[in-house]
Image 1 (spheres, rainbow, N blue to C red):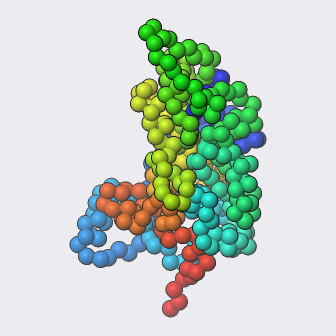
Image 2 (cartoon, rainbow, N blue to C red):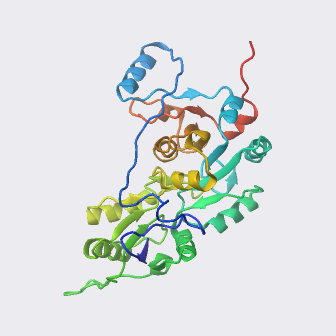
Image 3 (tube, helix red, strand yellow):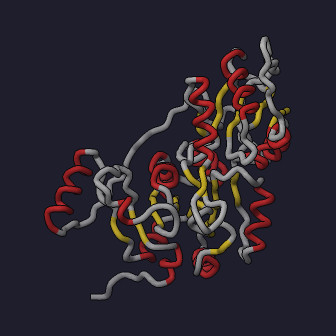
Length: 336
């Protein structure tokens, strides 16, 4: 969690060269469209499938189609946005076939952009991780924890808090009163392995008592992939603690908010219909793409299983789903 001295119109940094205030989406308006992209796909398979289809139709969603013709999808867009954890790697292990897939897309002239809600690294640090895994990547966009510090420095904002507050403790004694900085204009909460009660209380005081102080969250992910052995509690657990104590909903600037999508579309001068969002999470990656008006592809190499996708309780349906992105190398249109 980070605190920044800023006016109520504070905008988190999206790049070293940030868009002008006129171009940037307003964090105060917080407009997030929950629009599901309709996909035509024949569905059959008995009473259970029919019941599921009825439930989803009532929810306004069309069941996702299994990707069968990768070339058709590739040819229909000019930019692919990839989530990282669960799509490109798991923990520090590269998922099979990723380098060859990225090379294929580059050979077809596609722009590749990588986005992540993980806040443990800055853009530069993620670039080094790509290099360590043998990947050549130019565009990495990060909103996050230690990464937040570096991004705020690039944007020229003053800040306090962060990892340095990880060792601070509160000694509760009779009459103890905790002071806080009255100039803090925004509390930014991201994934934080050093989260503690001191940070909860300090952030709570700023949001409650500083006029116009914004509560900004990098993401609300329930789990994250810190290692490839298991899932770990995600940034949403830290955000939830501040939400619980302030009773104030955060402005979410990471996925599924369209904040990043709007910036990327303007930065590269492309329409969102020419973008395909590829991710492993329904409630962040796929919803991010749908909110931005993009094509969406769910991969099953991360946190989402086909059972979760096809559950009657799930109303978020991507355009397509497949096992992993290396399926781009093998899936061709069926020959007649």
